[in-house]
Image (cartoon, rainbow, N blue to C red):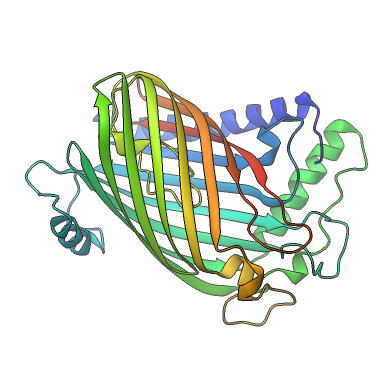
Length: 349
């Protein structure tokens, strides 16, 4: 998957669109006509950046999210979120509350997929299959979010999905490349290991021209298989009707973003985040022994992440496309930045 012809990108987009369309249609038929809930499908792939994609590092992420508005009594962290919000000065009288369940997977690989032995100067194979429960409580100018996530490291889901995608491409392009990855047996916690993460964030609207542009900042704290603190800034410009905290920046991995139940809109957006890393099991391993993992002094402690994107909503459907970038995560000789694309599809009902 070094440099893909545009036909491969086109076929993948067509397949994704058909799956999303089937899911959204089914949800619409079965649901009450209220538009206070929805479903989202999120696709992260370096394939989405034609001629620049590199089949390595964060190579693929997929997630399916169900979200709804103003539901009480079913979210396990809601009491804690409310207390944190009051401590931060966020009242309850005019809260906008959105809750979600999300299931997803993220996959990481080294650069050379043809080698079956551990590559000691590149990142280890790693994968996570997870279920997350999120809540945003927001007023007009402030939002507090919390997420509880449980997952399994080291399953064969990543290996099988990557082999399927590579085989699909070889058949379409009538070529011998890309090869099937040979090193998934060396992945972090190979065979499976339970893990979890708690994440809290606070977003503030700093400036705006209502309906045209806004600027916001966010700080966040994660505890668990990824332990870190971050600070970010984001901005939008266009025809805006959704809440400032709903920018779809990195929903598969670390975003506190939840979809907003908004009217028609179209806007361009940009986001930046600096992250101070304390621990990352996807690089350093967890409790189980792994064939290869980095020591603490081999990972970068300060990361820079960013994205630019365009979001458009018409009627009950919303689509976002973005290009994402991340600075080098480790200090070995093959350290490098990474780019990938995101396609997010949402349907409100």
